[in-house]
Length: 64
Image (cartoon, one colour):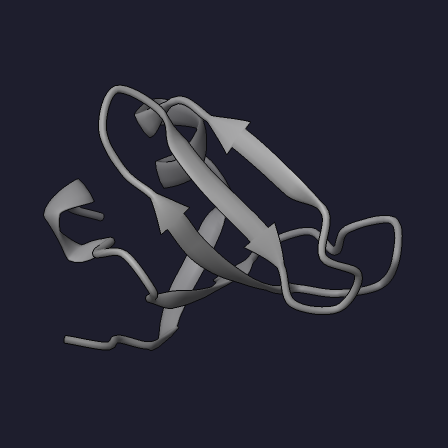
């Protein structure tokens, strides 16, 4: 999956659920690291681009 496809405010689905049970995440910040926010509990996680590519199953909603 191409990293340019992960713009800010896009909603992505992860392969494994978060401990709270949520699988939907909103991309909050991009750059050298990606900051994503769980839409179920609000937890914010920072990932490297390689980790993000590995964890994302698909883009649910892409905002422009």
